[in-house]
Amino acid sequence: MAGKQDKEAAKQAKKEKRAQSKAKRGQIFQAFKMQRKEDKALIPWMLGSFVVVAGAVFGIGWLFAIQWLLLPIGLMLGLLAAVIIFGRRVQKTVYSKADGQPGAAAWALDNLRGKWRVTQTVAATTQLDAVHRVLGGPGVVLVAEGAPHRVKGLLAQEKKRISRLVGDTPIYDLVIGHEEGQVPLRKLQSHLAKLPRNLKPKQVDALEAKLAALGNRGAAMPKGPTPQGAKMRNVQRTIRRR
Image (cartoon, rainbow, N blue to C red; front, side):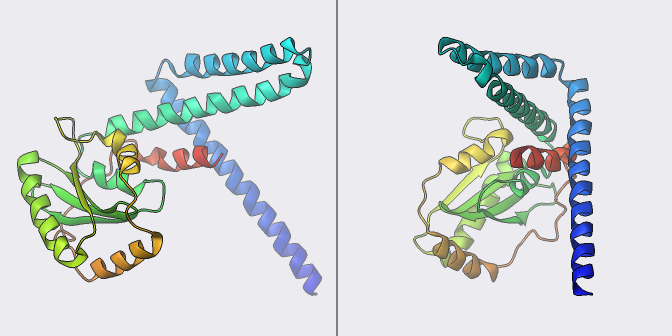
């Protein structure tokens, strides 16, 4: 009886795995069709990267008279290069659509790669300006979006409020935008990655517990609409995992 149940469970798990794989392929295909309509250079870039990489590997093999042995490897690497190009161009399109919309920074923080602890909208105004808090190796990072003359005051207030609890822990602040001194939305991930690592994981855990009781002054404020094109988020994650 137990053996029969185990076989049924294994069969069901295999069926679910096939269904998930099919769904992922469907997402990628839909994203490809959407991207191709908006990005006329997508196919030339993908074909070009495939041909260049595969040709380079074949050429190296030709120098050592093992070109046919390396050809399958070249084709696989060429395909991988094309997929990477596709993922990056999709990401660029999604961020360009989201840029400037209310809630775009919150959406971008929600998609951060790495061990970041994000608390959205710790402070906000009725004009949809907002400050979000990010905890990680650098310490505390306050990310603001909205009108610069308004978020400047929000940042100062939130920084003062947090500094009373965190002591000597570094606090960084930045504003999303394209003006001097601001960080473009598409560069948010890389900007955070470049910050110095001041805390160890256990210290980040302790910091998160300490700030959890602080509460949010903007939790009830509207966070703005989901940026147009944000539905491609799952596709980006699928591509990264592959």
